[in-house]
Length: 358
Image (cartoon, rainbow, N blue to C red; front, side, top):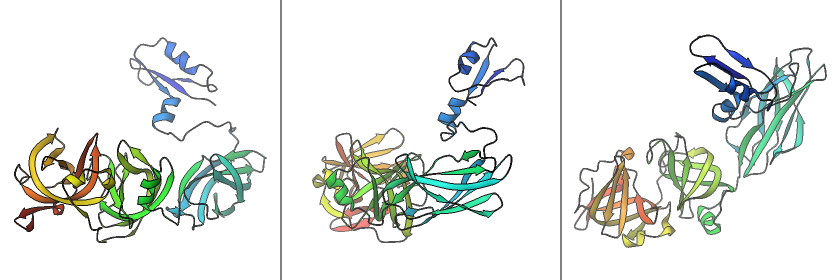
Protein backbone atom coordinates (compact mmCIF):
# COMPACT_ATOMS: atom_id res chain seq x y z
CA UNK A 1 0.00 0.00 0.00
CA UNK A 2 1.27 3.46 -0.78
CA UNK A 3 0.86 6.69 1.11
CA UNK A 4 -2.44 7.64 2.73
CA UNK A 5 -3.88 11.12 2.25
CA UNK A 6 -6.60 12.78 4.25
CA UNK A 7 -8.58 15.87 3.31
CA UNK A 8 -10.26 17.50 6.32
CA UNK A 9 -12.72 20.36 5.72
CA UNK A 10 -12.78 22.68 8.73
CA UNK A 11 -16.44 23.60 8.18
CA UNK A 12 -17.54 20.00 8.70
CA UNK A 13 -15.53 18.72 11.67
CA UNK A 14 -15.05 14.99 11.83
CA UNK A 15 -15.31 14.30 8.10
CA UNK A 16 -12.21 12.66 6.67
CA UNK A 17 -11.51 11.47 3.13
CA UNK A 18 -8.86 8.77 2.74
CA UNK A 19 -7.08 8.23 -0.58
CA UNK A 20 -5.40 4.83 -0.85
CA UNK A 21 -3.11 3.66 -3.58
CA UNK A 22 0.37 2.72 -4.64
CA UNK A 23 3.25 5.16 -4.34
CA UNK A 24 3.21 7.61 -7.24
CA UNK A 25 -0.36 6.77 -8.26
CA UNK A 26 -1.53 10.40 -7.95
CA UNK A 27 -3.15 10.50 -4.52
CA UNK A 28 -1.59 13.86 -3.67
CA UNK A 29 -2.75 15.45 -6.95
CA UNK A 30 -6.30 14.24 -6.36
CA UNK A 31 -6.26 15.59 -2.81
CA UNK A 32 -4.98 18.97 -4.01
CA UNK A 33 -7.81 19.21 -6.58
CA UNK A 34 -10.47 18.01 -4.16
CA UNK A 35 -13.09 20.78 -4.04
CA UNK A 36 -13.35 21.41 -0.31
CA UNK A 37 -12.77 24.88 1.20
CA UNK A 38 -10.01 25.34 3.79
CA UNK A 39 -8.87 21.76 3.45
CA UNK A 40 -5.92 20.28 5.32
CA UNK A 41 -3.87 17.58 3.60
CA UNK A 42 -1.88 15.08 5.65
CA UNK A 43 0.64 13.45 3.33
CA UNK A 44 2.51 10.33 4.41
CA UNK A 45 5.62 11.65 2.64
CA UNK A 46 5.64 14.60 5.03
CA UNK A 47 5.53 12.26 8.02
CA UNK A 48 8.36 10.20 6.59
CA UNK A 49 10.52 13.30 6.17
CA UNK A 50 9.74 15.21 9.38
CA UNK A 51 8.29 12.83 11.97
CA UNK A 52 9.20 9.21 11.25
CA UNK A 53 12.28 9.47 9.05
CA UNK A 54 12.85 5.70 9.27
CA UNK A 55 9.31 4.77 8.21
CA UNK A 56 10.15 4.00 4.57
CA UNK A 57 8.18 1.75 2.21
CA UNK A 58 7.65 -1.99 2.02
CA UNK A 59 5.94 -4.44 -0.29
CA UNK A 60 4.96 -6.96 2.38
CA UNK A 61 1.46 -8.36 2.32
CA UNK A 62 -0.97 -8.11 5.20
CA UNK A 63 -0.25 -11.75 6.08
CA UNK A 64 3.51 -11.15 6.46
CA UNK A 65 5.08 -11.53 9.92
CA UNK A 66 5.54 -8.29 11.83
CA UNK A 67 9.17 -7.93 12.96
CA UNK A 68 10.57 -5.27 15.31
CA UNK A 69 14.09 -5.13 16.74
CA UNK A 70 13.47 -4.03 20.32
CA UNK A 71 16.80 -4.34 22.14
CA UNK A 72 20.51 -4.23 21.34
CA UNK A 73 23.42 -4.32 23.75
CA UNK A 74 25.84 -3.10 24.81
CA UNK A 75 24.82 0.48 24.10
CA UNK A 76 28.39 1.49 23.18
CA UNK A 77 29.79 -1.01 20.67
CA UNK A 78 33.47 -1.64 20.01
CA UNK A 79 35.40 -4.08 17.86
CA UNK A 80 35.91 -6.15 21.01
CA UNK A 81 32.25 -6.63 21.93
CA UNK A 82 29.80 -9.31 20.86
CA UNK A 83 26.41 -7.82 20.02
CA UNK A 84 23.31 -9.24 21.68
CA UNK A 85 19.87 -8.30 20.41
CA UNK A 86 16.25 -9.38 20.36
CA UNK A 87 13.25 -8.90 18.12
CA UNK A 88 9.51 -9.23 18.53
CA UNK A 89 7.95 -11.44 15.84
CA UNK A 90 4.20 -11.73 15.36
CA UNK A 91 2.41 -13.70 12.64
CA UNK A 92 -1.22 -13.02 11.65
CA UNK A 93 -1.74 -16.62 10.52
CA UNK A 94 0.07 -19.86 11.21
CA UNK A 95 3.26 -19.88 13.29
CA UNK A 96 6.86 -18.71 13.04
CA UNK A 97 8.96 -21.10 10.97
CA UNK A 98 12.37 -19.37 11.13
CA UNK A 99 14.00 -16.11 12.14
CA UNK A 100 17.41 -14.92 10.94
CA UNK A 101 19.43 -11.72 11.08
CA UNK A 102 21.35 -10.38 8.11
CA UNK A 103 24.09 -7.86 8.77
CA UNK A 104 26.94 -6.00 7.12
CA UNK A 105 27.91 -2.46 6.14
CA UNK A 106 27.57 -0.06 3.21
CA UNK A 107 24.12 -1.53 2.39
CA UNK A 108 25.64 -4.97 1.86
CA UNK A 109 24.00 -7.40 4.31
CA UNK A 110 26.26 -10.27 3.31
CA UNK A 111 26.36 -12.08 6.67
CA UNK A 112 23.57 -13.92 8.42
CA UNK A 113 22.92 -15.85 11.62
CA UNK A 114 20.00 -17.84 12.97
CA UNK A 115 18.04 -16.55 15.94
CA UNK A 116 16.33 -18.56 18.67
CA UNK A 117 12.99 -18.21 20.39
CA UNK A 118 13.67 -16.69 23.79
CA UNK A 119 10.24 -16.14 25.32
CA UNK A 120 6.85 -16.06 23.58
CA UNK A 121 7.09 -13.82 20.54
CA UNK A 122 10.61 -12.62 21.48
CA UNK A 123 13.50 -14.02 19.46
CA UNK A 124 17.15 -13.45 20.38
CA UNK A 125 20.48 -13.63 18.62
CA UNK A 126 24.10 -12.54 18.62
CA UNK A 127 26.46 -10.96 16.11
CA UNK A 128 30.20 -11.48 16.60
CA UNK A 129 32.47 -8.47 17.23
CA UNK A 130 32.83 -6.38 14.08
CA UNK A 131 35.55 -4.17 12.64
CA UNK A 132 35.96 -0.77 14.32
CA UNK A 133 35.07 2.61 12.80
CA UNK A 134 32.24 1.28 10.66
CA UNK A 135 28.46 1.57 10.64
CA UNK A 136 26.97 -1.86 11.28
CA UNK A 137 23.65 -2.45 9.52
CA UNK A 138 21.26 -5.23 10.45
CA UNK A 139 17.80 -6.43 9.56
CA UNK A 140 15.79 -9.35 10.98
CA UNK A 141 13.81 -11.60 8.65
CA UNK A 142 11.03 -13.93 9.81
CA UNK A 143 9.24 -16.61 7.78
CA UNK A 144 5.83 -17.98 8.77
CA UNK A 145 4.66 -21.57 8.48
CA UNK A 146 2.65 -20.33 5.48
CA UNK A 147 5.92 -19.47 3.73
CA UNK A 148 5.40 -15.69 3.96
CA UNK A 149 8.40 -13.54 4.88
CA UNK A 150 8.41 -10.34 6.90
CA UNK A 151 11.31 -8.10 7.84
CA UNK A 152 12.23 -5.44 10.35
CA UNK A 153 13.33 -1.90 9.65
CA UNK A 154 17.04 -1.51 9.02
CA UNK A 155 18.94 -0.78 12.24
CA UNK A 156 22.33 0.98 12.19
CA UNK A 157 24.93 1.25 14.94
CA UNK A 158 28.42 2.81 14.96
CA UNK A 159 31.26 0.50 16.00
CA UNK A 160 34.18 2.13 17.86
CA UNK A 161 37.78 1.05 17.42
CA UNK A 162 39.66 -0.37 20.40
CA UNK A 163 42.73 1.52 19.11
CA UNK A 164 41.74 5.21 19.30
CA UNK A 165 43.39 7.75 17.03
CA UNK A 166 45.55 10.51 18.48
CA UNK A 167 43.84 13.87 17.99
CA UNK A 168 47.12 15.42 16.82
CA UNK A 169 47.30 12.78 14.06
CA UNK A 170 43.78 13.67 12.89
CA UNK A 171 44.86 17.28 12.46
CA UNK A 172 48.01 16.20 10.62
CA UNK A 173 46.13 13.93 8.23
CA UNK A 174 43.28 16.44 7.79
CA UNK A 175 40.87 13.57 8.40
CA UNK A 176 37.45 14.54 7.09
CA UNK A 177 34.10 12.73 6.85
CA UNK A 178 35.72 9.61 8.28
CA UNK A 179 34.53 7.53 11.18
CA UNK A 180 37.17 7.90 13.89
CA UNK A 181 37.52 6.89 17.53
CA UNK A 182 39.26 9.12 20.08
CA UNK A 183 39.73 9.04 23.84
CA UNK A 184 40.37 12.07 26.00
CA UNK A 185 39.47 14.35 28.90
CA UNK A 186 36.55 16.78 28.64
CA UNK A 187 37.96 20.31 28.98
CA UNK A 188 34.72 22.18 28.32
CA UNK A 189 31.49 20.30 28.94
CA UNK A 190 28.32 20.04 26.91
CA UNK A 191 24.71 20.43 28.05
CA UNK A 192 24.34 23.91 26.59
CA UNK A 193 27.43 25.45 28.20
CA UNK A 194 28.69 27.18 25.04
CA UNK A 195 25.39 27.13 23.14
CA UNK A 196 21.96 26.87 24.68
CA UNK A 197 20.40 24.47 22.17
CA UNK A 198 23.37 22.52 20.81
CA UNK A 199 26.25 20.42 22.12
CA UNK A 200 29.63 22.09 21.69
CA UNK A 201 31.94 20.26 24.08
CA UNK A 202 35.73 19.93 23.89
CA UNK A 203 38.05 17.04 24.70
CA UNK A 204 41.84 16.75 24.69
CA UNK A 205 44.06 13.68 24.65
CA UNK A 206 47.65 12.77 25.50
CA UNK A 207 48.87 14.09 22.13
CA UNK A 208 48.33 17.61 23.49
CA UNK A 209 45.62 18.55 21.00
CA UNK A 210 41.90 18.96 21.48
CA UNK A 211 38.77 19.17 19.32
CA UNK A 212 35.08 19.91 19.48
CA UNK A 213 32.32 17.34 19.95
CA UNK A 214 29.29 18.71 18.11
CA UNK A 215 25.66 17.73 17.95
CA UNK A 216 22.57 19.73 16.99
CA UNK A 217 20.87 18.40 20.13
CA UNK A 218 21.86 18.84 23.76
CA UNK A 219 23.70 15.76 25.03
CA UNK A 220 24.08 15.20 28.76
CA UNK A 221 26.94 13.37 30.43
CA UNK A 222 29.87 15.34 29.02
CA UNK A 223 31.23 17.06 32.11
CA UNK A 224 34.61 18.67 32.68
CA UNK A 225 37.11 16.11 33.93
CA UNK A 226 35.31 13.12 32.41
CA UNK A 227 37.47 10.70 30.47
CA UNK A 228 35.41 9.62 27.48
CA UNK A 229 35.71 7.36 24.47
CA UNK A 230 34.06 8.83 21.37
CA UNK A 231 33.32 7.57 17.88
CA UNK A 232 31.88 9.77 15.15
CA UNK A 233 32.59 11.61 11.92
CA UNK A 234 35.63 13.90 11.76
CA UNK A 235 35.86 17.12 9.80
CA UNK A 236 35.88 20.90 9.75
CA UNK A 237 32.95 23.25 10.14
CA UNK A 238 34.47 26.44 8.77
CA UNK A 239 37.63 26.65 10.92
CA UNK A 240 36.40 24.44 13.76
CA UNK A 241 37.70 20.87 13.77
CA UNK A 242 35.08 18.58 15.25
CA UNK A 243 33.61 15.14 15.61
CA UNK A 244 29.89 15.12 14.84
CA UNK A 245 27.11 12.51 14.80
CA UNK A 246 28.99 10.85 17.63
CA UNK A 247 28.30 8.36 20.39
CA UNK A 248 30.39 8.11 23.54
CA UNK A 249 30.87 6.36 26.84
CA UNK A 250 32.31 7.67 30.09
CA UNK A 251 35.39 5.80 31.27
CA UNK A 252 35.96 7.79 34.48
CA UNK A 253 35.07 11.14 36.04
CA UNK A 254 36.69 13.80 38.22
CA UNK A 255 40.01 13.69 36.39
CA UNK A 256 42.41 16.64 36.32
CA UNK A 257 42.15 18.53 33.06
CA UNK A 258 45.31 18.82 30.92
CA UNK A 259 47.73 21.60 31.79
CA UNK A 260 46.99 24.53 29.46
CA UNK A 261 49.74 25.68 27.12
CA UNK A 262 51.06 29.01 28.44
CA UNK A 263 51.30 31.72 25.75
CA UNK A 264 51.25 35.46 25.36
CA UNK A 265 48.20 37.07 23.82
CA UNK A 266 49.72 37.40 20.34
CA UNK A 267 50.87 33.78 20.26
CA UNK A 268 47.28 32.65 20.81
CA UNK A 269 46.46 33.77 17.27
CA UNK A 270 47.33 30.44 15.70
CA UNK A 271 45.34 27.56 14.27
CA UNK A 272 47.84 25.26 15.99
CA UNK A 273 45.78 25.71 19.15
CA UNK A 274 42.35 25.02 17.63
CA UNK A 275 40.31 23.14 20.23
CA UNK A 276 43.28 22.96 22.58
CA UNK A 277 43.50 24.25 26.15
CA UNK A 278 45.70 27.37 26.34
CA UNK A 279 46.26 30.24 28.77
CA UNK A 280 47.49 33.82 28.43
CA UNK A 281 47.62 37.01 30.46
CA UNK A 282 46.54 40.39 29.15
CA UNK A 283 44.53 43.57 29.53
CA UNK A 284 40.98 44.07 28.31
CA UNK A 285 41.15 46.94 25.82
CA UNK A 286 37.64 46.71 24.39
CA UNK A 287 34.32 45.04 25.25
CA UNK A 288 31.96 44.18 22.39
CA UNK A 289 28.49 42.78 23.21
CA UNK A 290 27.43 39.98 20.86
CA UNK A 291 23.69 40.65 20.58
CA UNK A 292 22.21 39.46 23.89
CA UNK A 293 24.11 36.17 23.98
CA UNK A 294 27.55 37.15 25.25
CA UNK A 295 30.56 39.45 25.12
CA UNK A 296 33.75 39.53 23.10
CA UNK A 297 36.73 40.96 25.00
CA UNK A 298 39.67 42.33 23.04
CA UNK A 299 42.94 41.55 24.84
CA UNK A 300 45.97 43.82 24.36
CA UNK A 301 44.49 44.86 20.99
CA UNK A 302 45.83 41.61 19.48
CA UNK A 303 43.40 38.77 20.30
CA UNK A 304 40.03 38.13 21.93
CA UNK A 305 38.26 36.21 24.65
CA UNK A 306 34.67 35.08 23.99
CA UNK A 307 32.34 34.47 26.93
CA UNK A 308 28.80 33.30 26.21
CA UNK A 309 26.03 34.11 28.68
CA UNK A 310 25.13 30.42 28.71
CA UNK A 311 28.32 29.71 30.71
CA UNK A 312 26.95 31.61 33.70
CA UNK A 313 30.34 33.30 34.20
CA UNK A 314 30.20 36.49 36.30
CA UNK A 315 31.49 39.16 33.92
CA UNK A 316 30.74 42.19 36.10
CA UNK A 317 34.46 42.82 36.72
CA UNK A 318 35.47 42.31 33.10
CA UNK A 319 35.72 45.92 32.00
CA UNK A 320 38.26 47.89 29.99
CA UNK A 321 41.48 47.97 32.00
CA UNK A 322 40.96 44.61 33.70
CA UNK A 323 44.15 42.58 33.65
CA UNK A 324 43.87 38.85 34.07
CA UNK A 325 44.84 35.36 33.07
CA UNK A 326 42.36 33.60 30.82
CA UNK A 327 42.17 29.84 30.27
CA UNK A 328 40.11 28.26 27.50
CA UNK A 329 40.27 26.53 24.15
CA UNK A 330 41.64 28.10 21.01
CA UNK A 331 39.05 28.92 18.35
CA UNK A 332 38.37 31.05 15.31
CA UNK A 333 35.31 32.95 14.20
CA UNK A 334 35.55 33.88 10.54
CA UNK A 335 39.11 35.21 10.23
CA UNK A 336 39.51 36.23 13.89
CA UNK A 337 41.10 34.14 16.61
CA UNK A 338 39.43 33.94 20.00
CA UNK A 339 39.67 32.04 23.26
CA UNK A 340 36.50 30.24 24.39
CA UNK A 341 36.18 30.35 28.18
CA UNK A 342 33.67 28.07 29.88
CA UNK A 343 34.10 28.50 33.63
CA UNK A 344 34.50 31.20 36.28
CA UNK A 345 37.55 29.42 37.63
CA UNK A 346 39.35 29.95 34.31
CA UNK A 347 39.58 33.72 34.81
CA UNK A 348 42.02 35.16 37.35
CA UNK A 349 42.82 38.75 38.22
CA UNK A 350 46.48 39.66 37.83
CA UNK A 351 47.75 42.05 40.54
CA UNK A 352 51.43 42.68 40.10
CA UNK A 353 52.88 39.20 39.79
CA UNK A 354 50.01 37.51 41.65
CA UNK A 355 46.89 35.80 40.34
CA UNK A 356 43.60 36.21 42.17
CA UNK A 357 40.60 34.16 41.02
CA UNK A 358 37.57 36.37 40.57
